[in-house]
Length: 118
Image (tube, rainbow, N blue to C red):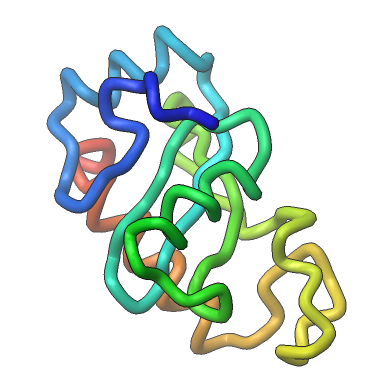
């Protein structure tokens, strides 16, 4: 689990200092797991499923939790994770295929990391 991260569980926008701390701890690119309905996010876990566990413990539903990554140097987001392989939800790819889910995922990440683009 990744509970030891100072902001592992995130439910509000990060400051530039927080983003810099994540960059120093995990490098330019790190994994993120997002609850697309509540706007909560877990950053820096070794596996997306670890982030999913945190979000499930916070009351999230598995169908609302999706994975990807962010590169804080190149300021890019991706929505690719093994966690996203969910044929029962119509997602038979590591990429989030449903455009509404993918948009919600990106919206949460862009809100939490909004200082990156300022």
